[in-house]
Amino acid sequence: MTHKIAILPGDGIGPEIVAEAVRVLRALELPLELETAAVGGAAFEASGHPLPEATLALAKAADAVLFGAVGDWKYDKLERALRPEQAILGLRKQLGLFANLRPAICYEQLTHASSLKPELVAGLDILIIRELTGDIYFGQPRGRRTAVDGHFPGAEEAFDTMRYSRPEIERIAHVAFQAARKRRGRLTSVDKANVLETFQLWKDVVGEVHAQYPDVQLDHMYVDNAAMQLVKAPKAFDVVVTGNMFGDILSDEAAMLTGSIGMLPSASLDEHNKGLYEPSHGSAPDIAGKGLANPLATILSVAMMLRYTLQQAEAAGRVERAVQSVLAAGLRTADIWSAGTRKVGTREIGDAVVAAITGKTIAKTS
Ligand code: NAD
Image (tube, rainbow, N blue to C red; front, top):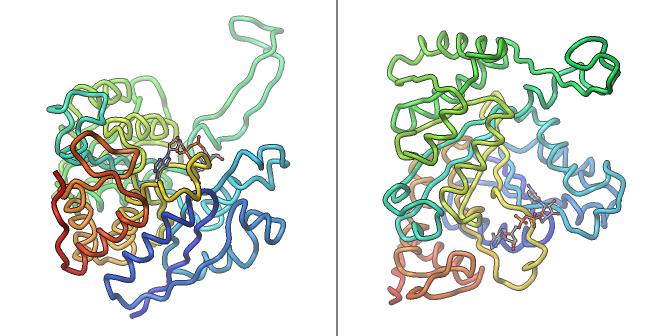
């Protein structure tokens, strides 16, 4: 069966890093049909909108979307609806992408880049799953008003509403249990059930869904403790699942454990495991067009696409092992370079990953 992949390179370094990821995808020789469309600032320049109808239609028709990055400071003065970043929000909404998966992997060769001690992060491989469409970020009502009660009646106040429904929690819990099954079989559900009604329901529902996954070990942890444990003993985690706000914060904390933003892939999935795959970083306008960008986060996003949407775990493993062998051979883009390794550009590191996939050897660098 041929899968259709929408390729949306975007702005800044987007086209450069996506080009390398596409070469890696082609090197696997799988039955895939790739179609490219403009998104973000590039689409605004071409057709006056960051997410043109044709791009949205392609993304909807595809089995998966490979997304580069969008944005540039030159668009900061545009009205909000026309800014490049609206394309990503529009795609999440229109495609119903409610589950955000962000692995934090610390490759042995890059432990020095972490702000934690090498022994705490060497070999780190955890996955943070954040619910993306609910919680206090979207709950209604919200706004500003004059307080009628509380500590200061009559004063201006602002309020937001934290809410989750049972089906919203059930569907993210299923994604998390299934991901844990594909990994080391352990899931930590992060909540604040000791204080918040919303997260007491969260904890109850995750516990109920667990009955369908008896092979996965589940623990519950309060978010304040999870934030501590992530810097104290991050390797104790396998998969972490949590709500939108806690996930926003914890996934950035976990990303920083690895120290290198150019290495971090991500996936956003819908109810049928259709996904949008993108690096966790932005469009890096400061280095765009210079051939300096690290394409490995985008290449590792391709590995996630193979694993989560295309159900090609073997091919995903080939891509991940190829990336590891390139690092082991001492090749580095500037963002992850250290003394004793060889600094190379975007294209050269892409060449090396393709060579590793197609079975060619990479010369070791001292
Ligand atoms: P950024 O992630 O683009 O860059 C932060 C720093 O990291 C820069 O110094 C950049 O050079 C470096 N960097 C990022 N990716 C790199 C890579 N692959 N290789 C080497 N170095 C890399 O964040 P920013 O500078 O805050 O934002 C720039 C633009 O990107 C803004 O317009 C912002 O809105 C947009 N943005 C887009 C997304 C997205 O498309 N999903 C996400 C975040 C930011």
